[in-house]
Amino acid sequence: MSLPSLIEIVPPAHPAPVLVTVPGSKSITNRALVLAALAEGRTTLPGALWSEDTEIMVDALRALGFDVVVDADAGEEGNRTISVAGLGGRIPNAGMPGQPLEIYVGNAGTVARFLMAMLCLGDGVYRLHGTPRMHQRPQRALVHALSQLGYRISANDGCLPALVSGESRSMKRACSVSIDESSQFASALLLSARAGGWDVKVVGEDAEESAYVAMTSKLIEVFPRQGGEFRIEPDCSSASYFLAAGALLPETKLQVAAWPESGWQVDARFVEFLRRFKEADRQDDSPYPALSRMRDLGDSIMTAIVMAPLLPRPSRFVDLGRLRIQESERVEALHLELSKCGAKVVEAGDTLEIQPSQLHGAEIETYEDHRIAMCFSTLGLKVPGMRIRNPGCAGKTFPNFYAKLAAPAPDGLGATVLDARTGRALTGDELYAG
Image (tube, rainbow, N blue to C red; front, side):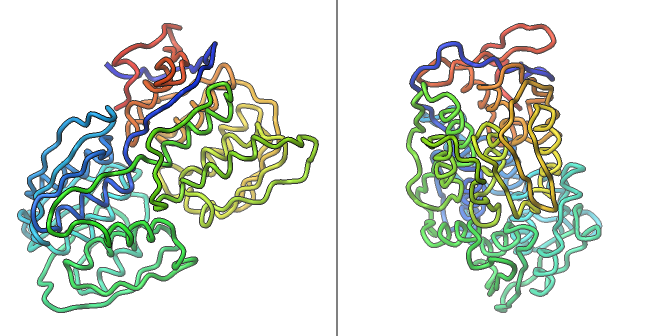
């Protein structure tokens, strides 16, 4: 069983203290899976996220001939312990020019981009393809960089589907890659750079400060190259929904277990945004300092945007352009769906300005975007009557999200999740996405 096509979030009647666990970082899990495949020997990854995006990566590695073992993880049911037998940069399976090996990437940007670079290490031809939305998302900068390295990539106007032709990598080569549209292009190249003998120069706005490129570089530095164990830390983007819930429902005194201390995840900074809910002086109507998608927060900026109408002062969110080319046109989606709830929102270029607003429930279109679904579901913990269409898309990164909303304290928030068409409370497996 799984989530119905329309649900309603009923706020908890009696909020109580919560200590919630959060599944592993998607960004770190998919980077670690690639590094494990390129390492020498078997690497074990406890705490690895088990969601649609990471399952797609595991399936792709298996299709390429890697031995990948997936076991249960005792610490969090949304995780797995995954082990990969690395082959030192060798990719066992490949196709031929007339019969390429098909690799499906879904709508997972990390899988599409990380594998496009990694497949250049192979000795044959591969065809990367995914969902219709994935075929709209940009790949041109990565294709251009790989072409500089001498590889043949045939892409549809810079998008998937793409044919990737691997070849000899005996000569060290150099390329530059722009991260103006996505930092994943640089991360893709860096993950395979040692195995490929590549010298990668990252260019673009704030290239030296890109949080996700920095995460990749730090991970490469500490990852075991000869096999071993590497623990995946909890996902701070996923934690943002629960941290936001704690701000909206202060009676919960909410804490996230095993909060990461590595400093790798930009969304660990979400706690700084939440200080706005604790202001003593609620008479001040001057705007808060602007928050940037490029400098201040990663994906959790969407959580901040959805919570902003409940703040006592105007909020401004800038540099949101990358949100337009991700799982959905997120800037437009946030504007439209917040407006449905009564929020006063102004969209100007890649900026959203949000005024304090009296919110009400509404039927939210998710655009098959996991973060739209989870952001507005979190808002529903405070605003009654919030109905979410197609909530199953949360399975992309957080399959047990709704189970955690509905679980009684201290393991969850004690909300009720209804089948909005029948009014029946969902229980057990009905609360799982995917």
